[in-house]
Amino acid sequence: MSWDREINLKNPAEIAIMREAGRINATVHATVRELLKPGISTADLDAAAEEVLKKYGAVSPFKGYGNPPFPNSITTSINNELVHGIPSPARKLKEGDIISIDCGTFFEGYVADSAFTAGVGEISAKAQKLLDVTEQALYQGIAQMRIGKRTGDISAAIQQYVESHGFYVTREYTGHGVGHTMHEGPQVPNYGKPATGIPLRAGMVIALEPMVLVGTHRTKVAADRWTVVSADGSLTAHFEHSVAVTEGEPLLLTVL
Ligand code: MG
Ligand code: MG
Image (cartoon, rainbow, N blue to C red; front, top):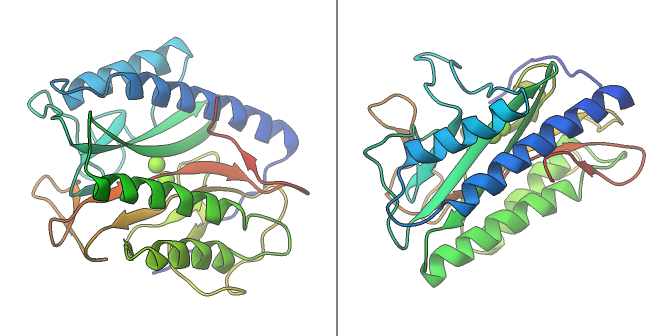
């Protein structure tokens, strides 16, 4: 899988705006995370997210994206749903569920994109391990985001970490450059070989997003044409940050 979208290097002023967009996105996450209790609907979570975006004069780049146009500001993906779940008033959280929340923020001409998975009440040991491994895989990838490394180093770090814990990475959905639009170059898959791909340069901003499945790397798209589920019904998780390559340490944009 490959694409030829342009890689747009960002100057420090642009990175500063993206940092603000990222802070808003992290605020949405913190707000939604507080609401993850049995009985709340995924539409309620979406409404809460929209309220935060509105407060900061931001909108979600998810709304109206794609074909059919995505109807909401966040995606809510429960248990076997890997990504792109559509919020609904009929879909209520239950004790023991795990839910992935993906949110984008479009602010002053730039996009921030990040996601997390969390448990609802008490979750199984297996589900907790999945969450821990997926989140750590994201940080393994971020640690590679330095000058001198290439996109394949990021991909390989994520894949090796996940597979060393007995889980699977998706083949169909990938990390990506982010900036004026949600999806720019370079594409960064969650699998790959070290020392291959595009050399990293200061000013690249990449949304890294390990999507991890317990039982298979295979996925299917549901009848709503958006929700991506594991092909075997097994649990899935998703963590994402938008991160800038600098002359030094990688800079996380989507944190408070
Ligand atoms: Mg995302
Ligand atoms: Mg993304």
